[in-house]
Image 1 (cartoon, rainbow, N blue to C red):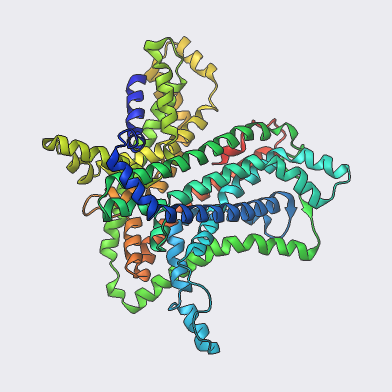
Image 2 (cartoon, rainbow, N blue to C red; image 1 turned 180 degrees about the horizontal axis):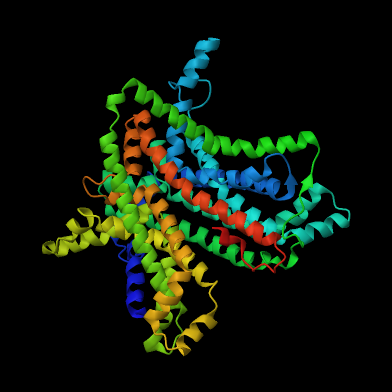
Length: 560
């Protein structure tokens, strides 16, 4: 069993290995391509990617940490609401946010037109949102919840007793936050920022729609516009190295959070003691927490509804409702198949990791665990890199083995898309299943074996019923991620199988923003599902923390 799973995990690592292998065959032609890129487009890709990453990093740290400190440490009106409402922007993909704000804030948009007509102003009232600064703001609005979630969890689990000790020693509020709370949660801040930056570098929708020259958009131009596989592979490998460095920083921060996140220092109530501020300051915190929720979710969703209403009232018969139903069904099918396959794979891998090793022939040994580690890295790999890593070996096999028809299999059917989704999202399912297995004591397995239960009976009769919640959570997360995925779907989708994400992107690219509102709203509605799940999880853990029973030790990163 483990040998088969090892082969499958290594097969899923093939796209990444293919991109990296492009440097192994580095010849004079490849060197000439690299030199040409260095003289023309590469400096622009590096500059804009670094500028975008730096702006997003600064923004998510400021907004995420400020909102986490406010909710975790202070009492103010609406605090219970903002504990989960600050997660709502997670449901809003960056490219959907871009469509809404472009239509609302552009020079010919209704807002600027109305203001110019009302006050007699001339010219543009603010800079064009389709720019680098606009992309930075949009990414900050939809990605700050990563930092907020991890920082808030770390504050709740690690900072209660040190902050109380600092207060008794006479430290002021500002000093307690600056010198005690923030150093304690620094690993959580680093981990959340790394996750936000990985999402930023992997994005294609916002960069392409705003006309930015980033590594992801460069990969598409090299592959589709210039038909240069070597240049695309070189750019993809550079992007992969950058993401790998971010992933290493995130993993190191997560390992440090396991120490900082233990609950030995919590108060008896299981949470921080909320500080009550004067009236004006309390309402300032309410406004500060409401602003990112309004800008990152409420106003864009409302504007998408307005765009859809304008389109429906202006041309009710012109709305492609029948085609929309076809796109929605296609998206649902793909997401459901990807979720089922990724969850089944995660259950099998989790069970294989659970089994005791009885020697090299039985356990698959280090190679199996290496394959699992590679599988866990898949979520950090950008969709553009995954798609390119699939297309390159497929093109090579088709050129050297024309009768195989492998190109038709991976580009003319759903096989290529499903393979890409498994590469990217199996790690999400595996994380959920492994979290479920940590709650099952190994004595249960030993008792089952003593009673004569074989492996199949152990899995189907004991583990699977107890893992049902973790399995459904894994399937839900993969389903939602698949519905929102854009870069790999653009490259690998077969003819006639457009998804809601692809349709929304194509309509927005053609400046048909009102028509793009319908698929965009559907994606947002689906994206709310994991937010609801996270909100319920936070509420349940707060209830467990208030209970008199000894709470289970859990790292802050478990909230993701």
